[in-house]
Image (cartoon, rainbow over all chains, first blue to last red; front, side, top):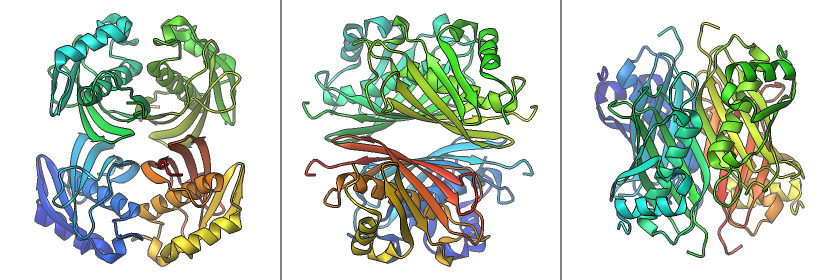
Length: 139
Length: 139
Length: 139
Length: 139
C-alpha cells in the first residue's frame, strides 16, 4: 500500500523542493502515514520566539503531500485545495516540531487527510490541520 | 479525567434532549473519547436511502458535545462555534452509524476536537468533522 | 451566466426533493448568487426555540447547491465534499431565515462558494458557511 | 466604528512586525474592512514562480488581524485559533496580491471574519480564507 519509503520521500523533497528540503526530515513512512520533522531555525520564528503560523501551515502541507505521495508515487500531482488549521497551544521554544499526517480518503480525484502537529517532547498537539488535495486526471 | 460515564451521558441526553435522545446510544466513554451510535431510521435518510448531511452533522455535534461533557461535567455549557465536515464516502444503506469523538484541546474558554464517522461494519470513515466549542465563563 | 431562474430552481426542488421542498422558497437567483428562505417551523427548532444546527447546515447546503445549479443547469450533479460552518449569533426566535449563497469558483470538477445566513430582519449574520462540491465528469 | 486609520495600521505593522512590515501595504481601512497589499518578492514564490501557500496564509492572517485591530484598537490582543483556506486559482505571476478582509463577528472573546485574496488585475479570487481569533479578556 506504501509505494515510497521515508528515504525515497526525502530524496524527492531534495530534488523537487531544493529551497526548503533542508528544513524537513522524513522520520517515518508507513501504513499509518508519514511523520515529518521541521528543523526549527530562526527564519521559522516570529517575534517572541515561537514557530510562526505560516511555518506551521507549511509543515502541515508538506507532511500531507508526502503522505499522499507515499501512497500514489512521485509521478503524481496533488494540488492543495483546502487547508483548515486549528491553533490549539503555543509551540514550545527551542525545539523541533513533528507532524503526524494520515490519509483518510484517497479517491480518483480527491485526497483528504489530517495532521497533528507537536512540539518535540510535548504530548498535547500544538495544532491540527485538515487538508484536501485535488489529484489531476493525468496520473 | 473522565467525570461522566457512558450511562451518565445517556441519562443526560434523555433528560436534556428528549426529542432526539432515542436516536443516539452512547457506546463508550473513556480517556480516548466517546463513541456514539446513531440508530438510523427513515427520518435520517434522504432520497436514495443514504444518511443525510444534516443527520451526519447532528451526529458529529452530539458526539463531540458528549465528549466534552464527559470531561467537564453536566453543569457546564458548551456552544458550537465551528463545525467543518468532510464528506468522504457514501454511507452504507441499512446500517447504523458510529461516531468516534476525541477532545484535542480543552481550554478555559475553548474546546477543540474531531470526530470520525463510520457506517457500522465498514473500516473507512464516511465523514470527518472538526468542531470548536465556546465554553462560557460561568462554568 | 445564469441558466436557471428562481422559478425553475423552485420547481427543481419540488420535483427532486419532495420531502423538504415546502421548507424552502427561492427568493432570488441572479449573477450575484441565490437567496433562499427557510420557512421556519417547529420541526426546525431545538429546545429553547432557536433554529437548530442541523437545520442551519441544511439551509446552507441547499442554498449553495441551488447557486451552483443556477450556473450549470439541472442535469448536473454536485456532491458536497466539505462544509465549514461558523455559528456566530443565536438565531432570532419566530422569524424565517435567509441564506445568501455565492459561487466563488466553478471549475470543471470542483465548485467552491460561501453562504451568509440571517434571521429575517437582522443585519448581522447568524452563521457563515463555506462549501465545496465535487462535480462528477459526466456533466 | 473604525478606531484606527490605514496610516495608523501601517505604523502599527512597522512598529510591531518589523521583519515583515515592508512586505505589506495597508491600502484601505473603513467600515467595510481592510484591504492589504502584498508586495510580492522572490522570497514569496515557490518553484514555478507563483505565490506560495504559506505566503497566502500569512497575507490572509495579517489582513484579518488588522481588520480586527481597526475595530478594537492597537492595545488589544487577538490570537488566531482557526484559519481555513480554500485555494481556488493559481496566482498570476509577477503581480502583487490584494486581500480584502471583513469582520463578520466581533464578540467579547471571539472574532470571526473572512478574506478574499486576489492577484492584482484579476477579478476572480485566488483564494478565500475564514479566520477565527480569540480575544483575551484583559482587553
